[in-house]
Image (cartoon, rainbow, N blue to C red; front, top):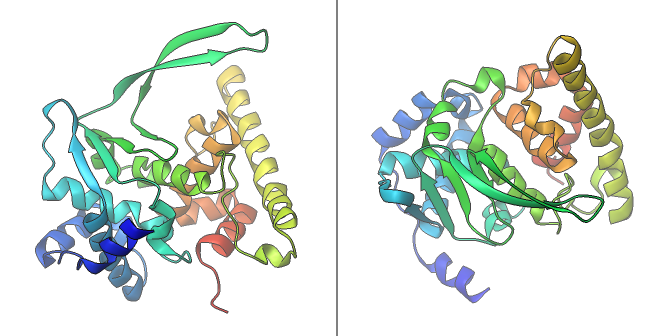
Length: 264
C-alpha cells in the first residue's frame, strides 16, 4: 500500500499528441469508441507508463512506440472497471522480446508421470509476477482484430482473472453481480454462461480439426482450459465486438455487465 501511495504522488507523464494519434491510427480498435472513452484511455495509459517498468530481453530496445503500444492496449480491459489500474497492482515489470519465445514446461499426468516439453509462446502472465510479451505479436494486433487476436489483452485478461486467486476463468466479481446476493451465487451465474460457451467452442474446434467442419472464429488455444477461453474471449470482445456479439451474445451481455458496469 505504501508503494502504491508513493506512486500516486508522482504525476503521470504527458503523452505527446503525435505519439498518441499514431498509436490510435495503428490500432484502430482503440479509437473505435466514444470520445470520452478515448480520453480516459489516454489518461490511464499515462498512469500505466508511470507505474510499470519495461525491460528488453536479449538486447531488445524499449522505445516510446513499444511502451505506448503496450500501455494503451493493456488498460483497455480496465477502462471502466472499479479500481482501474488497481487490477494490475500485483506486478511492476513487463518483459519484451522481439518475437515469440520457447518456454520449457513441466506437467504431471493422472498417473503421476512427469512430462517435460517446450512450448512456443507470444506472451505469458505470471501470478504476482511480470508479464512477458512478443513485440512482433503486439505489432500484429494492428491487423488481426478481424480474427479477434490480441496478445496484450489476452495476457492482461489473465492478470484480471488471477485477482480472484487461481486463474479459472472467473475474475473477482463485484458485490451484487448479476443480481445475486452472495459471491458464490455470482460466481455460479458467471460460470452458467461461460462454461457452456467454452464447451460448445471446444466441440466446434474438435469437429473442425478431426472432421473438416467449419472452424470457429476464436483462437483454438481457448480450448486449453476455462481460463484460456476467458482470455481468448476477452481478446475478441475488446477488438471485434460485432463478431463477438454474433457468435457469443449471452457471453457478450455478461462481459458488458462486468467490464462496463452501469453506474449506481
